[in-house]
Image (cartoon, rainbow, N blue to C red; front, top):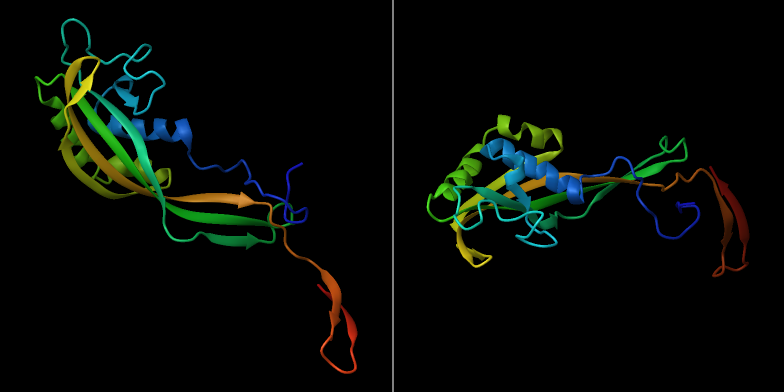
Amino acid sequence: MANDSTTGGPLLPDASPAPLEGQGLNRFLSGWVAGITGLSGNLIRPRWQPFPADPPAPVPGSGPTPGAVIWAAVGVTTRRKLGFPQVILDPAAGGGLGEATLFQQEQLELLCSFYDQGVSGDADSYASTLRDGALLGQNNEALFLAGFGLIDVGDIVPLPTLLKDRWYYRADLSITLQRQIQRTYPIRTLITAGGTIDTDFSTPQYTIPFTAA
């Protein structure tokens, strides 16, 4: 049985509601990028893979004859907390036992890298489409509904990259997002308390019992 504030020991947050993390967060942000750029979802890859540029996820368009395939790698590179969290106790929650909810503001740096075979320049075009499209409110509706806000869109940085003995043209774009992390912990409401007050430094000395409710 999990600990709560009456048992002592480390506290775990409730499983629900849980913030987007891990693969769920990566899929959500990749889908947002796909919607703004028009790239097919299978051409937007996680930035880190167990076997980079190898099956089952080979470099798109690779082979004896380079194809005109544009693809992207997307991933969160930094998650920065903002200040100290706010903790609010709700005495009525947890079946009337009380629960505490922690609210933490967090900024995420999303790095989007677009690649082409170095002959079309389309990587730049898709990067600029994302840069400009991310500033439209309608394009950010999915972000807002998921609790994210757009803070900043950075510069496009050309960065040629060597993959599997072939040079690819790469255009990087960094996007800053912000969200509120919410976690609920089993910190119970104090209903009654009792004890004694000892007046060790008075003459005569007193021991006074008390009860508070």
